[in-house]
Amino acid sequence: MFLHDKFGRAITDLRISITDRCNYKCVYCRTGNEGALYGDLPFEDYLRMARVLVGMGITKVRLTGGEPLLRKGVVDFVRELAELRRPNGSNGEPLDIALTTNGHMLAELAQPLKDAGLSRVTVSMDAVDPDRFARITRVPNGYDNVLAGIRAARRAGLWPLKVNCVLMRGFNEDQIIPFGMFAREEGVTVRFIEFMPLEEGRTWAPSTVVTLDEILARMAEYRPLVEIPHARSETARRYRFEDGVGEIGIIAPVSHPFCGHCSRIRITSDGKIRTCLFSVWDHDLHAQMRRGASDEDLAEFIQGVVQKKEERHHIGEADFVPASRTMVHIGG
Ligand code: SAM
Image (cartoon, rainbow, N blue to C red):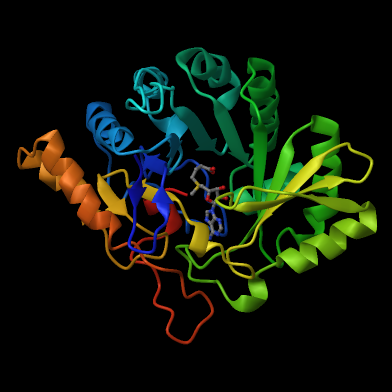
């Protein structure tokens, strides 16, 4: 049993933002204000939402933020999520539980998270040079922490380990080849992400996007790449180096949109459902809970919301309307 939207897409992936606070101020994301705009909920509320959604066919839950590791109790929350079982018909299989983090606090948390039942981790890292890293994140001395976090995650067996790099012209397009080397040396999959207009600073313009074609051309100057077949619902196009050492991915929502295969739904830190990163509204699931809705009522509400999932985004088109929240307040 799966949730389907009105375009026939199966909704199998849930992203839950557990805080919209962040300790980094990445240039493509935040302007630098410290506090959370929307706040967060007790973990038991996210757990109930997840339980209802898993009962409706969700197979994968990714925790995100803000910075999810800022939230005390995240390890216990992962343990509770890991106890959820998919409904009959899927043989009660465990959930795939993933986490997206800036990695700053991962070194000490990787093993406890793995022990609690986390399956995989994605670490955001936008330069392999400490000075450039500090310029992008606007935090001094973060680079060593993140590198230590990546290595601790690998030791803990949080695998496959992905490193996400948002490329923004003028900041880090010269990091493409260094990241190719990094993927080979560290044994991680580096995924380049095209910059999307979801930043607080409203600096996005088509010219700031480093596109898939450009990334491939640049990497080919370093070493030949071979494309790896990927699942339709996968966001990243995957490539390995011709000699078999190292894998990279490219997530190209701007130049090669993949909305037709989107399987995601998001819950914000304040308990709203978002059906698309670029939605201009959200749907207040937590308000239903506050009103005393039963699990069946929540499932009915979610069914209705999923039918409103947008067909596609309109980035770069004349009718583009900015999303009603920026990335840090949605959960990427
Ligand atoms: N703090 C965590 C982290 O740094 O991974 C999780 C939240 S962060 C908002 C999730 C992902 O969104 C990160 O990989 C980040 O690089 C990406 N992101 C943020 N703003 C973006 C933008 N304007 N365009 C593309 N990706 C963006």
